[in-house]
Length: 167
Image (cartoon, rainbow, N blue to C red; front, side):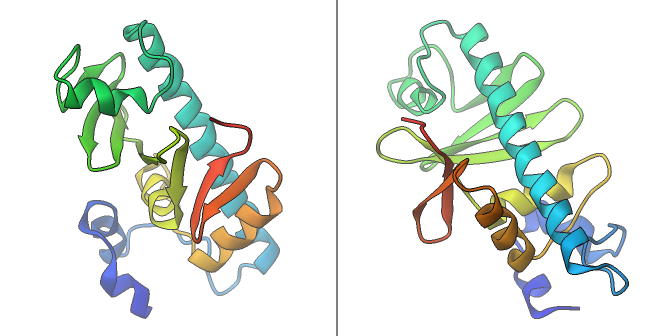
């Protein structure tokens, strides 16, 4: 067991603690394969976030951007702190929102002050662990994957990323 396994947030680490998840970091795996799997995971997360954004805009036509969900919840207009929209359940938290699809895929996102959707390695790992075929990747492999995806992704503050061109 790696030291980082002991400090996982319970919502996405419980399954990994039971040893039932195939790891992208297996002893026989090569670094490029692991980084490729991490890159696919990051791209899948971005696609899932775009799908959620589209579903929310269809369900709530006044929504200009996904970050507006926070304002709608805080003002108690239109939607509550948690609920169901299309095929997603959602829970607003602090500076973001956690979405879970009907098939259990989890996409947790925070919003920057300017409304950009931002995420970190923990959120990417939770997404990977929630996939139908869970994938556990290391922060090192995610870091390499994120850097390989520039200029698509931008680091907005240390360890936090956003899709470039978003505002």
